[in-house]
Image (cartoon, rainbow, N blue to C red):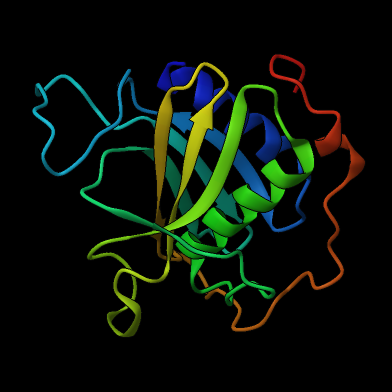
Amino acid sequence: MRLTEVLDVIEGVLNASEHPDIVQVDRYGDATEPWGPNVQTSTSRSISGVRVRYQSSASAMIFGAVWPSETPIPVPDEMPPPVRRAPRLAIFVVQLLDVARPAEFRSWQLVALSDLGPTDARGSSPSGVSLVCADGTKMLLRVSGASVSTGADPETEPFPDYVIPDAVKSWQRGRV
């Protein structure tokens, strides 16, 4: 499975989520393969991913990555506060995949990546999603966040009553 096909699924389930804090989901980059710190790249290749923009104007990205090591971690019972956009996105994507169960993937796992995360939780904070695609391809999606340009992200959950809608269960690539 190619990176663009993996990102199609992620973009689709994020759009189907209809989360009230998400104001836009869009794609960026033209890379056809994951990016990483030790990957030889040409200057014409970029990182490809899905960007999520929130009501506060903050954004988070999830993109194809190559990383030296990943550690599977359990999905926490509670979301981190909105100011921690990157781990929130990784957790949310895993929750969406748990509901959607897309045929394109055999399995998915929330992961921590070495040398990433807050100072007090390096290598143990949610930093990505590890996937095994239906064809056996393994793919890592890393998350990253961008700060708020206006106002501030809330310190507490702004939508505590949000429930993943049934539309995510029936999501199919090409439909959303």
